[in-house]
Length: 185
Image (tube, rainbow, N blue to C red; front, side, top):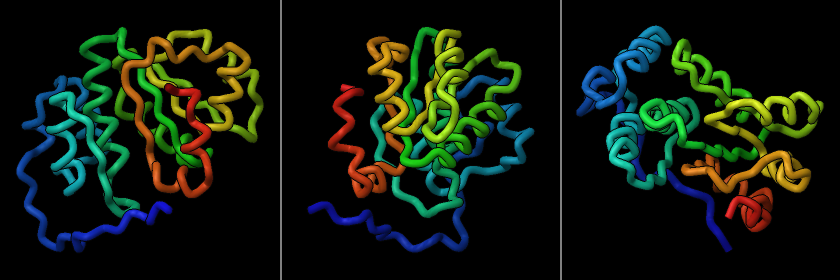
């Protein structure tokens, strides 16, 4: 009996951000990568979420597709891991396409920062994913079914995971994944 998330706020036509990417308390090398990606000023979701995530707070963000939600959580979490490379992040998403997209964004934001990720999705050969998981990974990005498979094979150990992100949690709930995600607890 869960209702779909409803955005109660209209799209802001003339949004004036309170912050700039330059003003966020993040590493200068990460700021350089953000600017090289063509980001100039934060979108509303980025402007509101990034400061809270940088403070270590849990955030539930609701925004339309194409509003910068991925950067809103990736930028501060990348900064957190860059400051402490022992941090381990799990990002769970409902679809292979979204996992690949997030991994591509991660790679662009972490250029020359020596942070690593593995994208674990179904419908593809599992062997390269297993090989990649045996390497150093700060971020594991994947779909629930493949992540569960890797855990059952004892290839993915989440005991050292320090941060979990559920992207499009409402969609995963609709698809029946959330009740089956006991594996991350």
